[in-house]
Image (cartoon, rainbow, N blue to C red; front, side, top):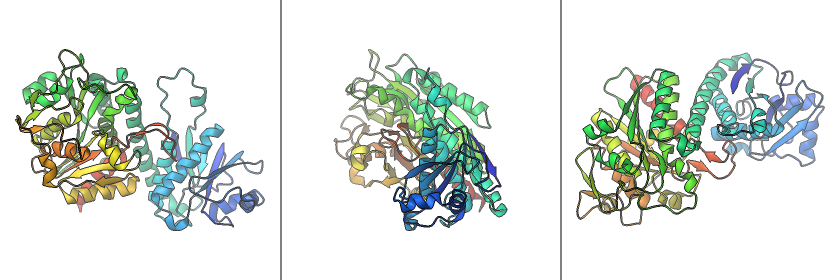
Length: 503
């Protein structure tokens, strides 16, 4: 979608729809909403008075009018003023864009939510308005043959501001918001793609294409290279498939050779469970098991465009987990890159095996900080529910603080789980150094701590997104399907790392 900025009165702009807002409980519209109300001879005030609109969060009202150059006004609720923050800006923008999509409006003009009466930072509000709008307008349409609905989606978004002194901040926010939203939608596309369009080699080709469009360097470690490096855990997961495993290495270069942030994303492009075959229910969604890898690819796209002065290495270990005569079996013992031996209790606990070799490789390459992101366990959904919080296991309080600070801007939520030594005891094996499944309880914790066994003493955070990578219901800026969760948080973390290095 094209995104522009116009220094103009919202009542005078040519568009298919204009968007204005109102806080809950406000009886007399003010600011830009007040100007539109006056242009409509008090119609918005009448709608409020009659009780058809009260400004609740996510509430929208479409008003058709001949008085303005645009045929539609979309009124969106901001909720209670005392609860208003940047995430509410993002949600309001998404709710309004959702209403626009239903009207088949193509050219959308909007005020920037939250700057005037809301009193929030102008640049942050412009960024969140663009993010919410573009995320809400997303549709996965690659394999559709009937495109009438898709062809009617908005193609232009215009931020409208009458006061010139706000334009520089809005310009910065607009650019940043567009980069982050497009990166998130790129990750959504990868996750939503059917498994036969997204095997390890095809995902590697997507990474090569991404690197060629910017300034990232891309290296694909093929099966021979993985064998040379001793990545027995990664190789074991992929040995049941006709498509060989690989590992994607994308690098963004900063000026400080002593700082390397490594982002590691699980890239199981399809997960049948292997010999421990999953049940048939929702098996079609197991293409989502590369959502962590997609998030890292999306973050690397955004980092490449934002150019923070910090070196970031994105690693995506890729494999298909399929049953065959060559597949990994329960009871097998495999050797990871570090030389640590792993007893296989379940072939459906395969993601942690990929991550073990990948984080070990990151350390070998000089990573000073490691963040891995993966659809790792069903247990995280049992603990935290679906679509609300992602889980976190970590060995470093400062890195956790940095990540949560980044998440406060992205609107994404994470909950840190305990990592006491007693949990590590649950991963002990009687025939190998470690086993890939604990005793069945605390599964999200033991799975995360399994990965932590391979990061040496480097600051590390593990993010389990199994409950947040896919949405089964509509939200303000999230439809059904892949969410692209962690793309914006990981990008913001890299930007913050760069800012700290320059301070």
